[in-house]
Length: 316
Image (cartoon, rainbow, N blue to C red; front, side, top):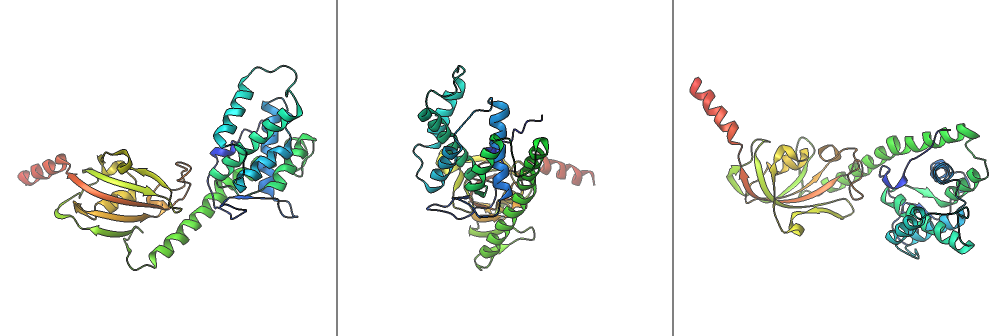
């Protein structure tokens, strides 16, 4: 029987859904109608336990409680602590008794819930915990709302693959484009033909510019996502960055070429000008619009191009 090994924490990111006391993709409870994605996610965890951990009899109520508590910001311990608890448990040799006591079973189950809750939020997956927990119980009992045996497993995989590979990137792209459309309404922002939104804070030296993508630049910069979370900063590292413009994302290169040495620019990049559908980090999901502020400290032209141009002129 084919194993299902999808790891939720590294799945594609997607649209955030408002819920409970903090911004979370997790809905406490659920609707009366089955939510297929939530049911598939719960089924996936149950299959993972069944095939990889000897059908470990975790307490699904405590797993769901851990997810709910994490969504509310009331988890009993941090995701890091949950990870340490789980690592210690699964890496330690165990005899035929999986848990020392019912309290130990609940503790491991709760840690699993906190860990999964953290993974779901990092991946920004909208999940209704009612159906997540129901699926775990159903699979454990040898039943599934998706059918029997391999049919249920294939349905689980199909629903998850469709969400993470099709629906989530599509939803996130729409969110990014709606966000950028609102930014564009502010007349302070200009837009290039490629869709780059920018504000030039300082023009810099008009005579010293990067004109070729092979030109090197030395810059100070910082990057943020749409939520204002910083994902990179040369300022924080205390050292400017240096690289050729063809070694960075397309929109970044285009923006830097709009200013001269000593200039500064702010810019919003459409996903097509950034990392596209790639998940780069918890802060940079698929089809994410990104913000950058860049100070162009120095331009180092590609001398080889100038040399070739001179040689061609001499030959003519």
